[in-house]
Amino acid sequence: MIKNLPSCIKSHRQNIGMTQKQLAELLGVTDVTISRWESGQRQPMWYQFVKLCEVLGMELSWFTEKENGNNDK
View 1 (tube, one colour):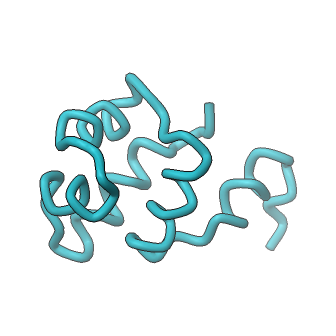
View 2 (cartoon, rainbow, N blue to C red; view 1 turned 135 degrees about the horizontal axis):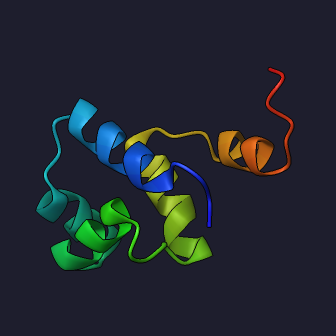
C-alpha cells in the first residue's frame, strides 16, 4: 500500500473544491469507491491511479519516489 495515499487523495480533492461524487464521475467509479480509497479500505487499480493523479494534479513520481526511499528531492 502506498503510504499516505488516502490522505493525499482527500486533501487534493478538497483543495480543488471537488466532491467525492464529482471525482467518481470523472473516473467512472462510484462515490463509495472514492470513500473507500480515502479511508484506506481500498486502493485504486494502476490505471485508475494514473487518471486520479491527472485529475487531482498529483505527481505520480512523488509516490514512486516515496515508496523507493528516494525522497531526497
